[in-house]
Structure formats: structure tokens, C-alpha cells
Length: 155
Image 1 (spheres, one colour):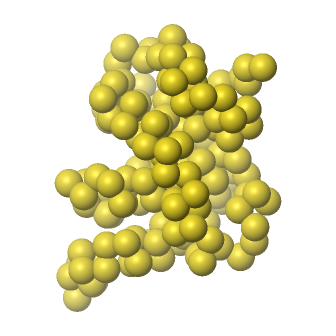
Image 2 (cartoon, one colour):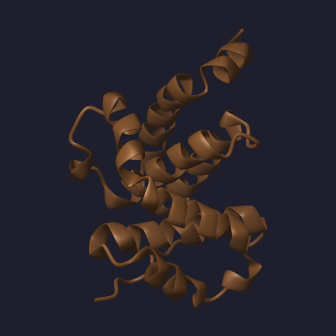
């Protein structure tokens, strides 16, 4: 069973990296709902309109890595939320997982950029005030995962 794609009306001037995050979000949303094989989800999303403008390598790394590390990423988020992750909006939950994946695995991307990109995704695809929740959770998660970088930035 295929789900509908996540739709929004974000700016047309998106970088290939931002597009890769948007498509990874769509893929992770599909995976969270259907639990299809990662390769099937990736193949499905690669057929989406506009995918050719995305950073394909980052998309595949982000989506397949988040799915592969799902349990450990979930464990990093849980201490910073006030409810069971399964009670979160699937969009905001997917964005938290993707952001946490980047915090753990994409050390070349500054933590503030990871958080900002997650907030922008939430503003485009999530609920009205979801970006505030995502920002708070990822800020606390970043302080755990990248303590040295966060401490240096805050001092």
C-alpha cells in the first residue's frame, strides 16, 4: 500500500541539499506508516516530480541511514520529549529522526544548520507551532550529541 506524498508550498529557490531533506522526509513518512523496505521507499521517492533537482547522495544517505539507525535515533530523542514518540505527529517525528541522524552522522554540517533545516522543514510540512517543538527537542538533543560544539558556540 502506498501513501500519498507529503505536500507543501515551500519556496521555489531551494538548494539541492534542502530538496534532499524534503524528499527524505517524504520517504521517512512513508516508511513510518507502511514499514516498506528502505530500498522500495527510496525507489518510490526517486520517481517523484522534481527529484532530479535534489542532492541524490545526501537523500539516500539521510533516508537509508535514518531507517537503519531508527532505534538508536529514537532513543536519543525520547529523553527530550514529554510523551511517547508514537503520539507525535508523524511529520514532526520524522523530522526529529532526520535531524538527529544528521547531528550524529553529518559532523561537517554545523549543529545550528541541522536544527535550522529541521525547523524550516517543520514550517513547510508540519503543524502550526510544530517548529517550536522541533527546535526545542533538537536543541537539547544536539547538546547531548555534540556537547563540545554546542558548549563552544554558547560561550
